Image 1: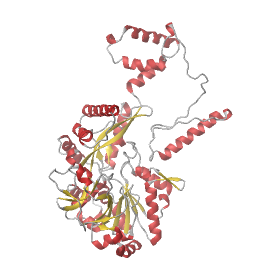
Image 2: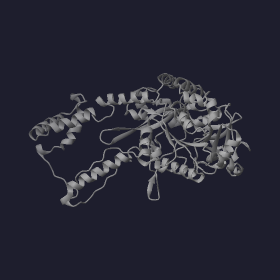
Image 3: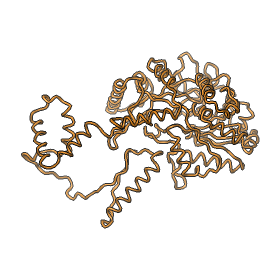
Image 4: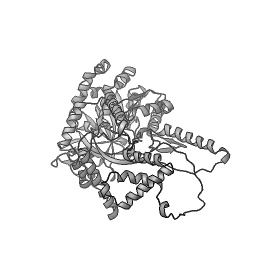
Length: 556
């Protein structure tokens, strides 16, 4: 992630030619992979020579006893910020003599450039002219992705006044959280009788698949803004494969088995749309000949400078790994500096000290479904394939998800609007599960659980894989298939807002890389807002069911 290095011995007769060839290969590879893998800097090829002396030194005396010119470039940049009277005379005399030395040896201009670079950080992406360019990009991102200024102002006010926040994500302490009862879930192995129903639906083209790929894997890549869906994370049969390639291969396999047409939708965002579109174009949809749709984002959130109370809640109240004494001191010092940074920037203010792409975030996978209504993707899908009645939704990293005829058949026979897949929870699984909340069966997000220990008592973990019945979903939004074809943006936006108001708003803290200088980078915590799909199970007017599937970690 931080860049690699290597040394090459080459035929001296072709030295310069080889150097250019290597540089071209590195640049080409970076251009191909920069969307899916983190690169801290542009590739560099430079000259090496062999040091035959090992470690050695020369003793400089008198007027020759000077440090290298690069040293003075750094030191002068620091000294000019101080009161001249506070600088020792010997130090001032040294600097004065060095400027004379520079004039005699034509080093004055390089020294000036070094000082200017250190003082003004001309490569800082948020400074000087670059700031204006990034602001223009940010405005374009807002315009192209349906940024809601009114909603944003309301959320910022709620965050700053403490009405939402990390501690506010949780339900009240009086909430009772109980494990499921017998009969609340249906084991997958008991669904064989529904297989024929599912197979008939597949052959009739009544099912589509939707992969959620709107987020960048910031936790996956330690804060780098790359596209998780196309990250080549595993080697299979001699080639590195991505999540998206694997899922399209699974769709192709099912389509071939049943001689069926299975549309595959990929939900994207401003962060992921263009790289995924480009990758699918270059690979011919990774060899999948069936219909593939990209569902672009129509919702976007401005990240915030975090509140001190949220950072302290994250680092002091939530469970933490215990470190040895020295490491703990370092971690505490870093965290205090992050709190000081947040206070200096303005708690709850818009996060703008970065390139434009890192200032925003998708608003959670609840919006990835509602985006189907607003961006016209569902309308196009149903116009081209009006027989589609069911969509199987899954996270991009849920590798076990596929169109299983028994599960599809059960979903159709049950009459559920939404049927969620859950897996037996392992001790390391975090992020929510199936529970009875004040007696009501629903999926409970880990963010909303009032007590940490409640999650340990739950038997099932949420995979987020959901079988969605299209027409009941439209009915929930107050829409019909004809409304989608009409494409009234105001009507569709109003329909989405009407349901969004019923879904909880969570505040989360994410690590974001801030790159500056030549390959240097820092990581800062930022706050962002999310609405999550599984909270649909809390709506009393949505009929939901739950299937227990084998597997762990969100896969079957």
